[in-house]
Length: 193
Image (cartoon, rainbow, N blue to C red):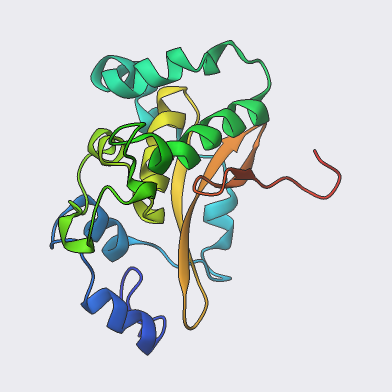
C-alpha cells in the first residue's frame, strides 16, 4: 500500500519530507500530505474539467485584496487571450524574488543572509512580501492569482527518484495547461496551440 500524499514515492523524497521546513498542519505541509498521485487509475479524474463552483471565483476578488490589486495593476483581465493571461501571471511570479522585500535589496540579492532568516510558509501575500524563490510557495502564489482571474488552477508536484519541483496547472480553453511559475514558462503543445 502506498502512503498518502507525496510520501512513499522514494526513500530520498521521504527523507526530504521528514526534514521539511514547513511546520505540521501549515498550508504547505497539508498540500504535500494530501496530494493525489497520478497513476493509470487516477489519470482520467485529473484530466477531467474542474468543478468550477468549488473555486468560488465570485468571492475571491473581495477576499484577496492584494492579489486582486496585482491582477488589476498588471491589467491581466483586459487580455482576451487565455494563454497570454497565464504568461503575464508567470512573468510576475518569476520576478517575485527580484522585487521583494524591496527593489533595492531583494531576496535574490541576499536580503536573507541565511536560510534561518527566511520565514518559511505563510499566506500567498506573505510569500510575495518576503520575495520567496521557493517553488512550492511561488506555485501557490500563481494559483492564487489565476483563481482571482477566474481561472481554475492546481498545484502539481513533479518528482524523479532524487529531485523534485512544484509547478501549476490551469484549466483554459477546455484543457489543463502546465505552467512553471518560477521560470515563467507556459507549456503548450508542439503546434503552439
